[in-house]
Image 1 (tube, helix red, strand yellow):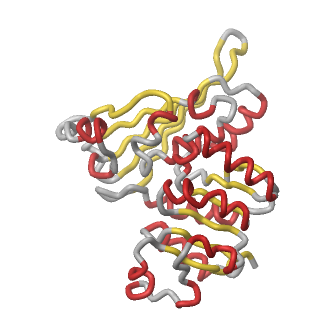
Image 2 (image 1 turned 90 degrees about the horizontal axis):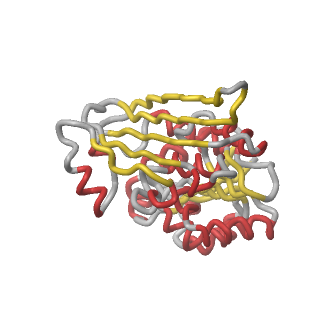
Length: 276
């Protein structure tokens, strides 16, 4: 039975914790949250499962650590996690930092562990990866449309978002690498796409972020893939994913189950970086 440690106890962390406790194949190793009172008083997590210091993860003997907190956790503790066991990074926007990405890849190879990136709301991630492996992936654009209240952003993007009152506003259109630090909580799907499309990477994959006040019930993710020319025509695939979501929700409802499925898949692939 695999032991899973959960880092972060927001809505997604709570969902995963309960799903693991109800699973016949997984065991909860620990739960960590920045606000300890939420675990000890409100959630009433058993005291032996509450980890107060992320530097003590090895003492709980996890087989997999799942981060669903904030990219800053991976910046500070990601290398250590990969020394301990496999690591699933729920905030893969952190990997847009090339130095961190290189360090984590090196640490995974050094200790024989897997760095797993959940596909989240990305539809067709495995197909994108296969094309990247063959070098036939020529272009990839991921468009995310959400209600203005679903964005956790600052600076110029926040100012643009405030204009989306009566009509949709494009907050950003360009390389995913530059977008990730501007909206680290909202574009993990784009980061997952950049990992899958490894021949294009964070600089080659395009991201388009749209604030749309008409989307009161959905998050919409559009994935546009371009392949090689064949018989004078370019290969193309376009998908549209409509994920039910309440106004103000950062993650759509279907993403929770997707994350748990990724948790089940995040093992057994050896050392390296893997989409799951």
